[in-house]
Image (cartoon, rainbow, N blue to C red; front, side, top):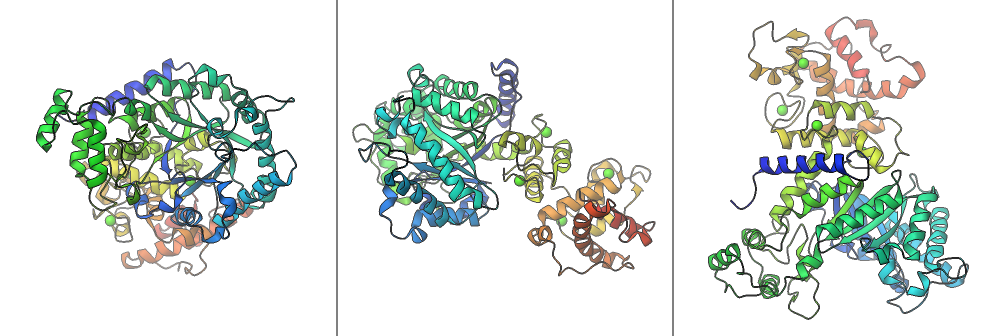
Length: 595
Ligand SMILES: [Ca+2]
Ligand SMILES: [Ca+2]
Ligand SMILES: [Ca+2]
Ligand SMILES: [Ca+2]
C-alpha cells in the first residue's frame, strides 16, 4: 500500500484535530482555512485553466517596488496583467509589496522625503495598473531578510522600517484604498523563522506585532513558514497567534519543508528498502543521489506516476505535507495559506546539484518542470488529493468531518447578511467559503459542489444527469406537498422524487433547497444578483407541468423583486398573493423568501 487509505487518513486527521482543539495552548475553536495559489514574483505565470480543476479561489503575487521604478508602462507589464487575469477568472487577489532595500544596498528613505514619496507612488501606481478588486494587501514581503539591520532596530525612538510601513499604510489608504468600492484589507509582514527566540525578540518583530494589534486599519499578520521540522513550523504559528491575540487574522503566504528537504539532497535514493525498490523499478542506480535524480527530472521530466512513486519511496519527503500543515493552520487560526502553485516551463533544466541549492521548487502543486504531460495533468497527485479534500471540507462548518444539510443551514442563515466587516476567520465560520466578504450564491455553489464531490450525490439533481436545471423541476412539482412515506415509496427513490432532505415528504423545505441549488448552478446568477429586468414577470395562470418552468423562471425575477422590496414592505407575500392558496401561488410565496 503506497499510502494510508482515505478512511484511515480521515480518522487520523479527525483525531489530530480533536486533540489539537482540546489540548491547544491557544484556547480557540478550530477554524476553516483556505488554500490558495502563490505566484510569488511571477504573476505572469497565472494560467486560469488550472483554477477550476484545483477549486482554487485565491491568488497571491508580490511586486518588488524598488525594481519596478524602471518600468515605463505598468499597464502592459506582464506581472500586472497576470493578476488581472486571475481577478477576471473570479479569483480573490492578494498583493504583497517587496521592499528590497538590502538588495539595492540602501536604507529605508527618510520620512517625508521625495525618495519616500516616489516609492509610495510606485506602489499605488502598481495597484492602480492592476485595475481590479484587491481583497488583501500585505505591506511588506520579508523585511527581516530584505532590510539592513540598522533599519530593523530602535533608533531615536522608532524602528525605521516599521515607521516606513505605517506611513505606507496611510498613503495607500488615502490614495488608493479609500477610493475603492470595497477597501482592501491590510496586513503586516511577512515574518520568517518566528520559532527562534532571537527573531521573536527583534525590535522589528515586536513592533510590527504591536502595530498589528493596536492599529484598527491593520487586519493582521502574514507569515512565511519555511521549516526543517514540524516542531519549527508549529513554533512559528504558535508564537504568531499568541503575540497577535485572538481577534485578528493570520495569513501564511509561503510555506514549505525546504530545510528538511535540503538536508537530504545528497542521500542515495536507494538508501531505504522502499527507495531501493523504486530505483530498481525505474532503472536507476540505488546510489544515485537525490539532487542528481532531481536534476534529471528537471531536465527530462518523469511521468506523474513516477514522481508519486519517488516521493512515496523517500523517507525525507512528507507526502502528507498539505494535510499536516492544514491541521496546523486550523489550530492557530490561519485563514488563508498560499502554496507554490504552478511551475513555469522555464523552470525546466533547473540544476539542484549546484552548490547551496535550496529545494523550494519540489513543493509545488502543479509541477510541469518535473513531470511530463499538459500543465493541467502535471500535478503532484498526492498533494492534489489533500488539496481538494481541504478545499471541499471548508464547507464542513460544524466540523463533524461530513458535508451535510446541517452545514448548508449555516450558510443559508448567513445569506445576504451584512458581514463585510467581520474578520476572515469569522467569515469562514459563517460560510463565506471564498472569503470575498459576502455570503451569497457563490458560496452556496461551492457548498453544493463540495457536497456532490464528497457524497457522490448532487442535491437538486432529481433526474440523475449530474446537473441541476429546469428538467429536474417537474419531478419535484409532481410530488409537491405529498407524503412519500404514506404512499409506501421506497426510500431509495425519495431524492429523485423531490424529497431532497429525505424527510419522507416533498414540501417547502425541499423546494427551498432546490431553489438554492438551482440558483447556485445557474449561469444567470450574475444577472439575478444584479436584478435582471429582462426576465418576464410570472403569469398567474401558469400551472401545467409544461409551463412550470415558466413559473420557475418568472419566479427568479420575482424572487429578486421581493428581495429588493422586502425591506420596504416588511412582507414577502403581497405580490401574487391573489392565488396564494393554489400550489403555484404557494410556490410563489416560497420563492419570494430570500433564503
Ligand atoms: Ca459537517
Ligand atoms: Ca463569499
Ligand atoms: Ca438533473
Ligand atoms: Ca423533504
